[in-house]
Amino acid sequence: MTAGFSPDWIVVQRWFRAKQRPVAAVIEVDQAPLTVGELRVLEIAYADGGAPDRYLVPTLNGREPIDGEGAWSSLVRAIADDAELRGTRGRFLASRTDALAALLGATPDLNERRLGVEQSNTSVLLGDRLILKLYRLLEVGDNPDVELSAFLTDAGFADTPALAGAITYESDDGPAAAAMLQAFVPSTADAWAAMLSALASDRPRATAMAVRVGEVTARMHAALASRPYHPAFPARAATVTETAAWRTSAERQLAQAVTAASGVAHAAMVEQAPRITARFADTFGSATGEARVSRVHGDYHLGQLLERPDGGFSVVDFEGEPARPLGERRQPSSPLRDVAGMLRSLDYAARTAERSFAFEAGAWLADARSAFIGAYGGIGPKEAGLLDAFELEKACYEVRYEANNRPDWLWLPLAAVERLTAGS
Image 1 (cartoon, rainbow, N blue to C red):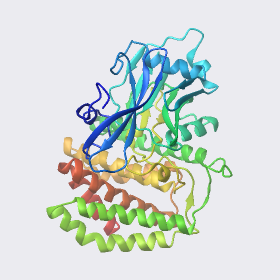
Image 2 (image 1 turned 180 degrees about the vertical axis):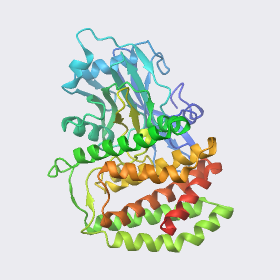
Image 3 (image 1 turned 135 degrees about the horizontal axis):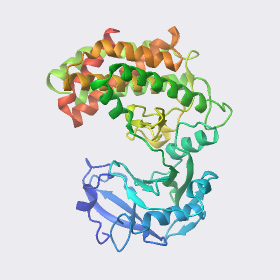
């Protein structure tokens, strides 16, 4: 076991994802020097005997660095130098983009401020111009967050932070994303906080926000489909295999929701399950030839948008749903998945507001949904059923999430499942 990095230490870190699995051992498997500190790779062995995970931990004097010590800045310098950081078993390869020089400036000021909002990753603001995201879980394969950020930057999509560089960890297992450097986008709040604030005091503004969210969503999807012959970013009709996979995914979310719920909620899900299954079978079974696929955001909700001082929104965090395997998150899918995710997020905002202060969610939601979809460019009759099915699948996912994490909130997705199953 690595000195200073015990199982007890690992399990309380916010970025450690497998908190439901008992940790048997923490083993340092690699270490590479930085100009200030070092990068350590820790392998986590589990008592259940399942596959281990590898996590990235920057250190200085045997512990994680704090702001102002220069360790975070040394990662930026490695990126600026296209450095190769050799470890004991693997290596970290850093690379910069053309955007970095302008963002650094002639006399770079890299004051460090680690942000307090990180969960599965660690984000550090450097000099009010750059933001460094450290990927703690080292997942072998192309990281969609880096991949989509690079593609959108190259495609000229201005509503996401420009990619400035990245670091990849290479080992015998294959390459894994270790860090991404982007332009820092000043923001007043994320769209979730901004929407709740508007619902409390200025509901016409909240509806106008739904319009702007629809517009930026349309621009994002247009950019992601702008190079249809790019092998990793196709834009084409969905195949039979893909629509069958959508049905399988939706049925899996339903089964997990039924299992996770208990008591009255479980009975309600069991009662509705046959109708939901039939809806999925009918909708996804007839979607081939009608549905389109491209790369999508994959975990799209109000919290993934930053409201800028100019009133616009910037889209962030393209990793996709963390519970899905990396390969699945990189697959092309229907853009309607993102639309459905945002509709569910608007519902969450409205129901949260309704519980917090005098507010009638239903009427506003009808206006907001119409405004969002209208600004997106509309949904045709052939797409409407598919959008409903994706929204119902997302609501099933939410039932499982709330049952496992916030049972006091289970009422919200349960009501959504009931409404969506009834077709209202």
